[in-house]
Amino acid sequence: MDGETSLGRVLPDRAAYLLLILVTAMWGSYFPLTKLALREISPLTFVAFRFALAAPFLWMVLLRDPRAARPGRGDLLPFLFLALSGYVLGTALTYVGLHLTTAINASLIQASAPVMVALASAAFLKESLRPTNWAGVSLSVLGVLLIVSGGVPGRLLQGSFHTGDLVLIVSQVGWSAYTIYGRTVLRRYSPAVATTYAYTVAALLLVPISLVEAPLAPILDASALTWAIILFQALLGGLAHVWYYAAIRAVGASRSVIFMNLSPLVGVLLATLLLGEALGAGHLAGGAVVLLGVFLTTRR
Image 1 (cartoon, rainbow, N blue to C red):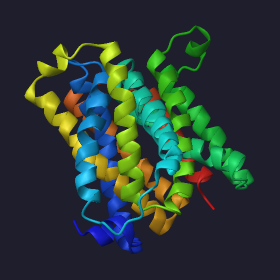
Image 2: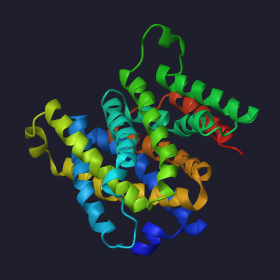
Image 3: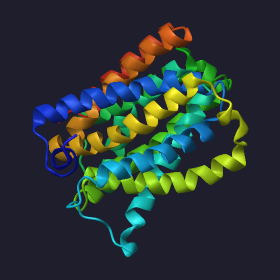
């Protein structure tokens, strides 16, 4: 891939939109594919190895662009924040939540992420939300409740829901912080620099945590399929974050986040095909309401 185009120069709109389609479809595949791998290894082991394998690969990509600005020793705090918010709190908790719920639930709940970003932007960046946007927020909340409750909200009062669903909702706080703060980091550094440094910090944090959670034996004995899924998410997944940041830089966060609606569609389809998970009326209704809410929330 061309270093200057992918790492530094602002992309044309058409290229940015194509990258957004590719990246969001790829992210949509993560939940059902990861669910397959989690049959053999723990979620924190999976995510730790993903980042540990991705970081050296991203460094090789980054070294192809020696002109990209590099942070000094005293300027590493932003990357620590990105790693903690986006990859430890966001990604790692997402995998833990996925382990405790279904891939369909995870895919549909994750679809509400743009709403969390919009709320955080309103709170911390003072971006105004119009009545239409607030209606979208309300619809998204209702949609998530329908998904978590299986279409019967009264079940929530009885405590009948997947614990993983709540973990997934909490993980979106981290992803929102990552997305918003990432805009500030991108004013000084290229997408490749931001992603590579944040991935490296995340790997240094997650590998020790995973060793406390579980020994190495399960992953060393994992099947070729599990390793293929890890490598897919580590290598292409690492580049996906670079591409996502490049797209945000080109067309803006508000436009970029709309493409996240593709992810749940891919996730649900693969969950039914690969895992045999049942798609119920609650999922359909909740997913539709969430997507409508996201559309209204991100409308300007």
